[in-house]
Length: 314
Image 1 (tube, rainbow, N blue to C red):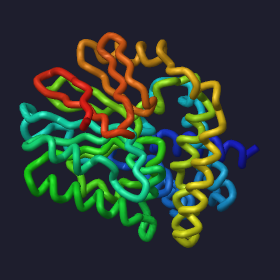
Image 2: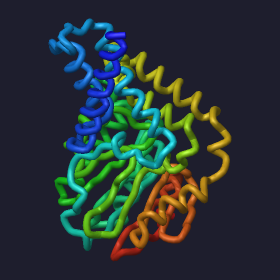
Image 3: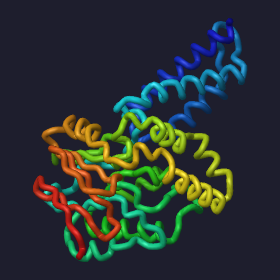
């Protein structure tokens, strides 16, 4: 009975501290937050109720304290504590046009990016995720195309452009690259300060898709991060590609149709501001909400003077 009480107290303490950290340090991704908190609570000496806690009691308590709150929020729109952002939500000059590119799914190169760039001068850039088929942000995992894209971002910023990247469902553990961008974030809660403009990738719109939400959190957990750091990069790339290929043929009930009602509800919560997502690959417009089609053939969007227009390089 004493051990059970200790586990309950440790799990409650863990959940409380995790919630505080999530709200006070939004720049800390969930996997890093959980890793640091786990190490602290498991390995720092701690006595409870006059008894020195065993390693096993701490491990169980911490796991329960980190997992249970996550599962409880799985069915809600409240994804704030699972989201993170680094950088500035305020552009240098809100009067500049903003080029928005969603879901290019690049592989060996960056597709039509250079052609799009040549069409515009003096613009800012926002990428709404799924830039590559899969992008694992760990040392030795970057491909030549990904390195080339980061160099492209460096050049745009040197020219004075604001460049933002809001991560999608095909990007993992990229937070260490955040200094290469003016803004990087993941999950929900993207916006541009003073511009009545809100955005996210779009994969979390449907709160009824519990299977995907579980995968989203599990695949970005501390355990997966540690696993991918321990195995050779070539193994990790193959494992990541295999998992992504399996996801394409699973959970089809939530992939066939655009979740119109769910998207409309989320968009209205930001009204009268415009709300933008990608992810669904097809264009939709519901009241103040817009879904940007994917960048397969060079399609992109322009946000300028409070209006959004879909453009093509052809």
